[in-house]
Image 1 (spheres, rainbow, N blue to C red):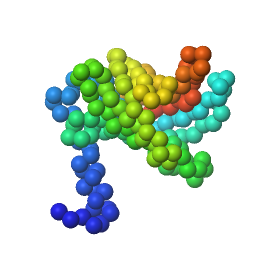
Image 2: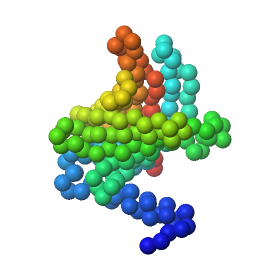
Image 3: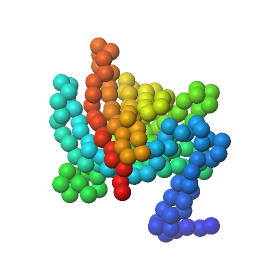
Image 4: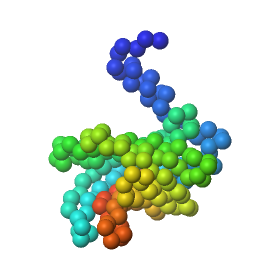
Length: 176
């Protein structure tokens, strides 16, 4: 099949990327991510070294089953597309998460195209928390308070003293 139209190619890629649900053999492993599937509005905050908020904006985050139900993918956008007219151009980030049965954990890779940044993580889940630890930087991300209607996310970097410093938070509310 030859596809030369960009819009047609995008539809084919989207159809191949997104799945209706997890494959049955992956459903249990991906259960911690199931409540995140869908679209979310975000209140985004950045913090300085003292923990003071330095900037806020609105954002959006979209999660879906992916790759024939063998993965969870998401795209976060900050500022949100609606807030860009006021808050300027920001970043679109893409993550793809797969389950690694040997680790009994998830491998996750985040890509930020604006800065050409790629960060691999290993993620572990508990009942309502998913913690991702970077494999290349001293960075930790965590989803907490996960419910059907909301969750919190935080980005922390390890300081020279070994303590973690809060850098960014998202407060998420499910879109109607």
